Length: 261
Image 1 (cartoon, rainbow, N blue to C red):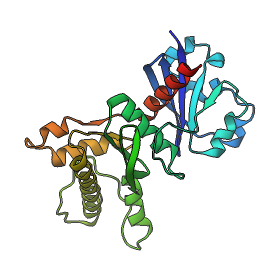
Image 2: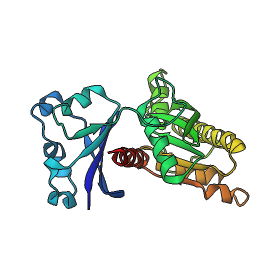
Image 3: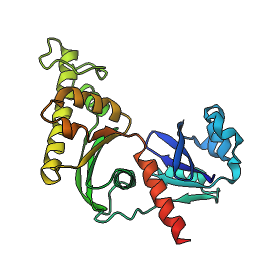
Image 4: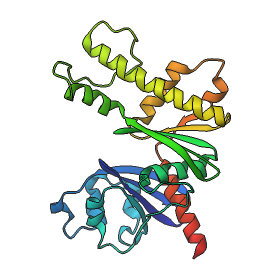
């Protein structure tokens, strides 16, 4: 088996994946590095006690790493390690100059893994909608994510409390302030998601919809609770959650690059 690692350096954490050829074996996450930790860094020291036990048998210091980063300061901590292959451009047509590489990679991975056309809904600090067809970016949108939305209401008002996201779908007509905030935020976000899905499926009726990101599973669950009916069951059957879209994108890119060698 050919073992290799994928790394995505995101805005809050480092995301790792262990592959054997094209088979995803294990995913784990590590914290951002401080400048003190980064000095004379070796890969195994990043993982410390977080490394999955299965990787202990790998020759970590010779295993090839394919990596993407959206945080330049964190990228510099690995600049001295030559076996890391940094991915800076994905062969997705129609991408604009300032589009985030994480969005590009997620859409590319989704399309390669599930087929086109496709809409990726990434629930993170920002809530992003990224649509593609025939290996081409077709457009999208960016809004506040769940926790950013809740935090903004608390931060930019004098009286509204800090409120956590509700575990389950909140009742629309709340009778206290905290519940009213949860209702307003969650139902507004779900309505936005529903409208973007509806708009995309007006163009591509059989399109796959993929939720991803830190709040992706949560939003996918609440979305199904809110909008799943017998009438639209067929479309809901093409609406899934997958946390590994960026890893699928790296794997697809690696396959193309390897074929060119």
